[in-house]
Image (tube, rainbow, N blue to C red; front, side):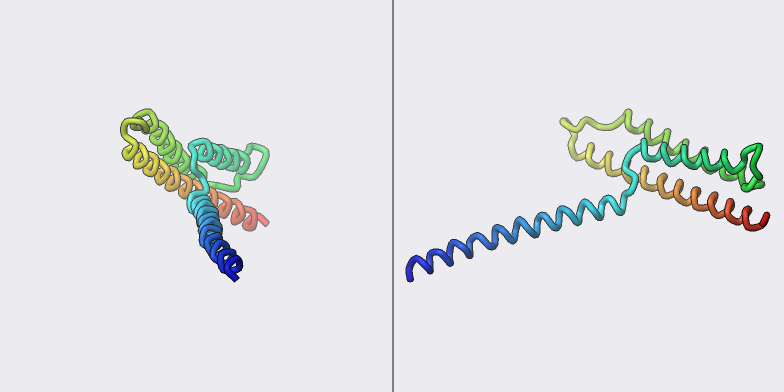
Length: 145
């Protein structure tokens, strides 16, 4: 009887620790997934890939041999893309001035949070531009039959 009581006490002690590990793992996993969902692009390289993709799309839709599907909107799309390129250059420039992580850790974290927000704003703008270009291309294709 005494051994059974001791065994149930040991087993009861194991369950809260196991529960803590499971809950912590779930919270960490879901936190990472939510972060990746909220911030799909977290690097300057990701922004540059998006810019190159949009640039290729504009170039392909205004090719000499193809129909000019963007029409008069091409200039506006190129201006908007140039503004986003300027934003990316500003983000790169700010990286030069980042605080030292060893001497000012709080400022370093705050700096990188602001950089992440700037990257996210630029990425959202690039996605909107891409959607506008694709819509204009599809509209142009339908209009030409």
